Length: 126
Image (cartoon, rainbow, N blue to C red; front, side):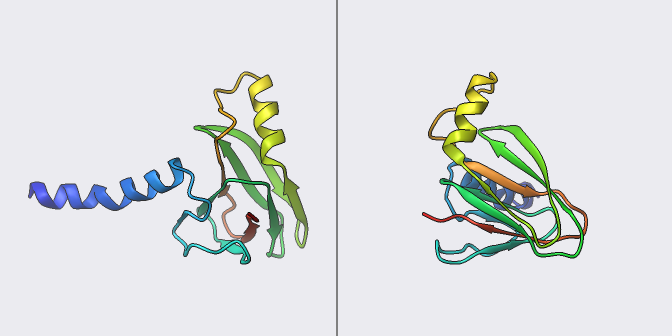
């Protein structure tokens, strides 16, 4: 019985470790991508980027997303249908630091698709 409990926690712990350590293509619930590909995030999915990134809405309606820097939510945003937004990681980290967020300049951004039905495409160039 004890071994079964440990196994049930192993996969979520490994996924969390991948995001926390900042692997640039660590995705929760999706396949990892290379720097030349884009990752489609369905509702509830997340990916981490170590550099600047672009978020595109591939759906017909507006999509909600959150950007987490370090361990804290930094920004909640909305991307309209067929719209793309670019985010500068270093600038966001500087702004977060000035606003008192406990971030380091080597932190990564974790992009969470918080929408209930729309997909977003995330591009993390190297």
